Length: 253
Image (tube, rainbow, N blue to C red; front, side, top):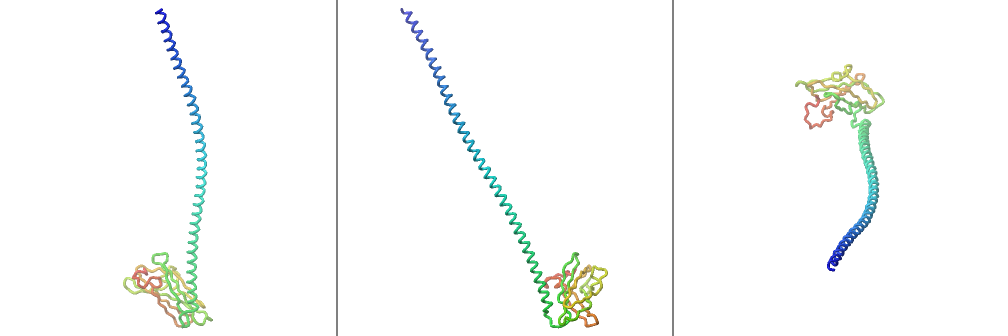
């Protein structure tokens, strides 16, 4: 009887252990299945959420790209407008400068003609209205311009010859050169003919000799027919547009 009881206890214990193992295995499998199910559901939700976020980001990127393209177009248009404005302003300044030069030239021309038509001098006859010098292309080259007018009765032509004498110093000695000596034209004559009723502009070029310092220009007009000659003297510095206060002994060099 006693042996039989022990055997039953052992059998019961074995079944209890087996049952515990089976229960544990079931719980593990059930837990794994639940964990798998929960993880899969969570993964699907996360994947769906990521897809939605991706779609939203793609839409935002598309909007930003369109905005960027629009800003680039606006910038290009503004840059073109700026360039057009700059060109227009440059054209305006250039046109204004040209207009101012034209106005200045017209004023000078008007003053010139006023001086001819209403001279300050009351003595009738021919007069040297103006004499000026401008620098030439060479280092010692000058271009002269003499304006001759006739005051009083203009029913007769004023005719004759103009002679120039440029006076100055060379190597410390006084010396004078006529038009033929200073002109670059080898066939130039010492005198220049004039023939006019109201006024005449006489122009030419001079090249000063090396070492020569010009001081003044003497203009002599000899009327045709042996009338009395007229003389005028112009300071070289004044004719060349150099202020009288400027000390420049080599202006004629």
